[in-house]
Amino acid sequence: MRRRMGDAGWNGPLGTDSSDVSYLLVTDSRYSKIADKKSRLAKLFLAQAIVQSITVLNFIPTPRELDRVAFSLTAIAFLSILMGELGRRHGRISLLMFYLCASSFTVLNSLGSAHRSNFLVEVIGDTSPWKVNSFRRLTFASILLGWLLQTLASLTALSLVANVILLP
Image (cartoon, rainbow, N blue to C red; front, side):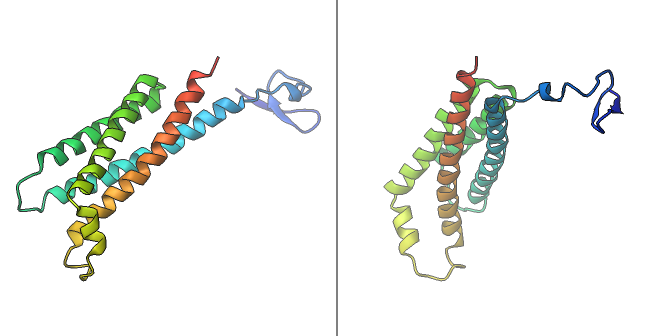
């Protein structure tokens, strides 16, 4: 749309006399909140994908037998992030709810398996130099960072779902 200089020096759209400034379109605050939450959720999904990639890299250099449960949980986490991103982009509540359930399941399961194997206690109590057990410390950091990101993403996704459901 072409613009022109109005009488009062206001650059308005062509075809107006610049007197309708008070009737300009104002975005409802709910839509602004939804846009902000969608943007925040996109950043959290990217961070979660990076943490999951680090987790996958932890599986590669190990000479031991591949832990099938941990690898399947990582695959489910990637799938849930993909579904969550599709739900975020297209406003599909069902995909966001799938993301919430599947990703929460994987994070809680990884925390539970680390707790059952006393992995967290061993890593925290280990006073050896960082280079010796860098693999274990990286795994520990990815578990904790994954839990933190999951908490933030779940809260953001839940509030996004609540705002979308409550829209008229």
